[in-house]
Length: 358
Image (cartoon, rainbow, N blue to C red; front, side, top):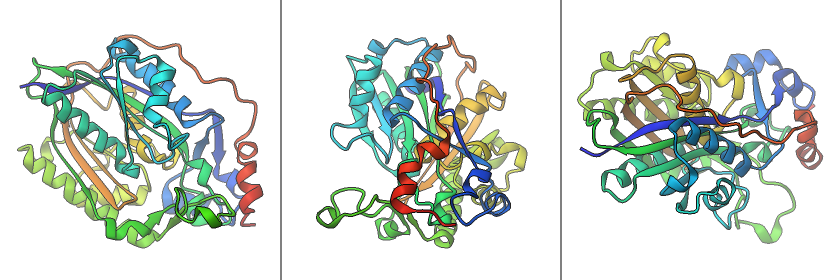
């Protein structure tokens, strides 16, 4: 059976760090308050555009897979914070990496976007329509931070992760064994950025920013990720005992812990890196994949459960058996341009528009 196998992986996180101590200077919060409620200690703030983060992550993923840009058939960019709405982020990334033979398409399922893209790539490979697909999950969410609102301004950061998915006829039991994607648009206002598109454009006087009903998002997140994970394991013919690692969307450590308890998975089988990056939306899972490989948490044949939820309200889960290789074939020398500003200096525009909470 023709399967899609992850053969390359790469991440790009900007160098400027916004710590909890930094946030204490611009919003009514504390390191203890943030850490206790979210598990986040710091997040990254980008000095470049989202497409630049995407291109570096893509170059690193291609090097790890041993493929050239001209080998790509399709580029899927999962994001809710593109440089521009027109043209698509995927075509901007295509130009930056020189992937002249690839079609490009954006997917916006918010924090579930990477798994929506992974399932799309898998199905297109299974049909024979595509052979080599680049998937990028990337965000520049700092653009929407409002420091007068401590419930959302402490959560989000910038970053990108990418994988190469390639057709494989010789690994029939590897790759995405089962997946589920879902949406409930009636709950869309639970987590949203009003006026981030054409809505209210005639009367717009300020920068759009996040709105969130935290308790209801928490409840739905735990239920949707836990239930969907159970269903994909059942569809794949697997038991919880078969799972080697859960890689969940990194939104809140309490959500991750509650999801793991719902699945009866011990802490050592749950990958968490939220302390370093905060919530990077569609980028959290691909960044976590890269770091789990670096940490030796993924081995050939490892059974991984991916789970995510996001604005929309969306959710997704996948049961994935890793392929034969966990080492990169090569390392890219692609790097971001230098940055000489602190995270707070990069956020000066947001602060000037919204003010602070102190």
